[in-house]
Image (cartoon, rainbow, N blue to C red; front, side):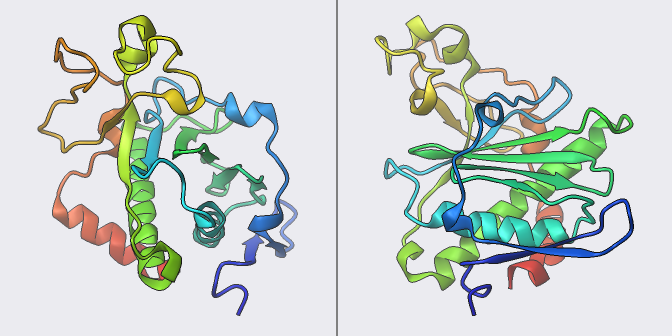
Length: 241
């Protein structure tokens, strides 16, 4: 019953010694993350950070713990050799047997930051592999939030947007009309731009010049077509339900 409602999460993994192990986590009782987790960044070959932005101004109470519980369950199906690093406001999941990818989630006041990066200790992967995994993670998150809003009464009116950080405001914070007295790169003061389809340009609403914003790695999150969405959603159906 506790697993069903996301109060505890069972993580199964197979370490290098070959002995199958299981651990149970209680997301609501996790300790604060170390500073190193906040400093993790993707490389130039990885997707740019993705943000689950909540327009009401705050991450709904209990949502992050529920999301961690479902991420734990999902990552079990990716054949990990080690358990995730879980904290009260952050987590690091290891995807693949080597592991191949690190999936990092960091909760702030009004958004959840998502970083997907290739593990530097693994062999080099093609850009296609990285993009495919990024889109798979995106569909998993969107499908998971839909299920949570349908099954959890306090999240029934859940509203969110997938966004990326405006590189123009990060590089030139003094020119950002949203916050002239505070650097936009600080914590919850990031200037976020909604993620748009492939054919549309990203425009910062705070840049009066209306020049398109170029963000390295944003294309890896973008879904190619409806068929791809259906394929990923079908793949995740068992984990979500």
